[in-house]
Amino acid sequence: RSWLKEVLLSLLNVVGEAADGSAAAELIRRLSPDFLILDFDHDELDGVELCRRTSAQFPNLNILVFTSAYCATKYHNQLCRAGVRGFCLQSSEASVLLEAVSQLLNGARYCDPAIEQLVKQAPSTHMPNSELTEAEVAVLIRLDSRNKEIAEELDMRVRTVEKHIEVILAKLRVPTRIAAAAKAVEFGYVLLPVNYGS
Image 1: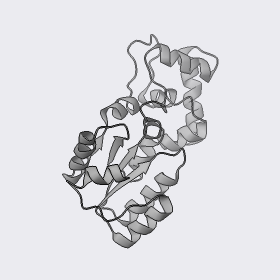
Image 2 (image 1 turned 180 degrees about the vertical axis):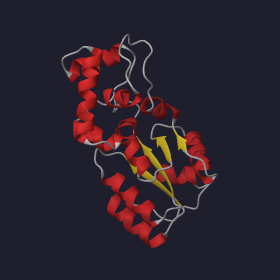
Image 3 (image 1 turned 180 degrees about the horizontal axis):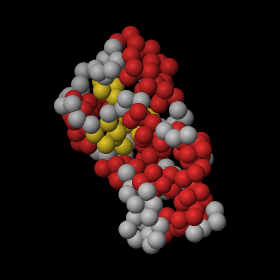
């Protein structure tokens, strides 16, 4: 947190810092800040819920998530729906963090290009006879997660995820989701969440 404060002082007046989600929620309620940088680095949904409640209470608050590639690719869509306007990797240089903050201060959104490329993978033109839809690709690249987690991330019903998986297996002509995931990797997809660059 001290590194973050040092970097941010050129752009922001740092009015508070917290060690966990409960302390952050209390500080936000008390201070009503204009900008929140959330160090989101746990495999849990507390950060998503904190963002959801905070943006409902303070709709004009800029929320930037400072996180690992793993959390950014696992919770990206949920965090966007919860009001997050920016994503910056913890492995980023100070200049990237400052760029992210500047973009949000100017009313734009910011997503680290590496994260954006991963969460918005398009149907592959190298996968013969598969004709996967964008929704099917979104499920396919998340097959390493449980159906409930995929449903939460993509804002789908679990039954919808199950139907997509049935169609994916049929289109790829494979018997299991493990085989489908292996085929996806073979054709250049990156399975989410990724666990590098933390």
